Length: 162
Image (cartoon, rainbow, N blue to C red; front, side, top):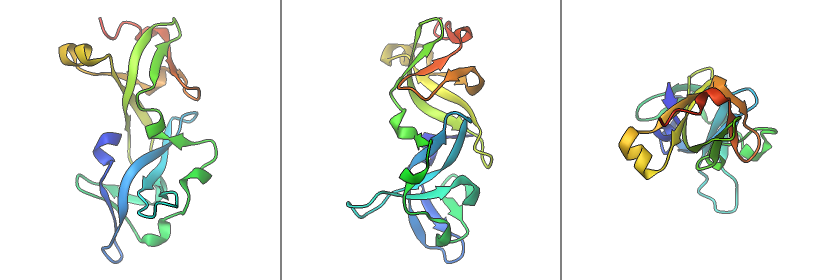
């Protein structure tokens, strides 16, 4: 399992020639399928979007780097990923239960590699709750709606902070 915060800022290295292709700045996710689709790399040119690598083209996600076969796996525009969205655009958004309970805000995503299946999301209940009880994880199978501005989970998750 991987947390997005562990992957952010890792260098992406080409195994063919050993060069660094860029650093990971974001993940592209398909919230309908519950899957990470790829990685967005920084772009040092201010006037262009970042670069995109499909998760299928990643050889490994290690502790210190992400490896790919070669620079040919890089695509130019992550915005072309129709129907998918930037994970960073979801961080700090609210999570509600179907019963109307505010469960907190999204802090991170947990997913498996190499299939990209999202296993859960990490929630913060605020500074006091984080210090007192720690952050909580909601299993992805509890998510009933994820495409709006708020994530909705089933009512069985309403008591995670008690």
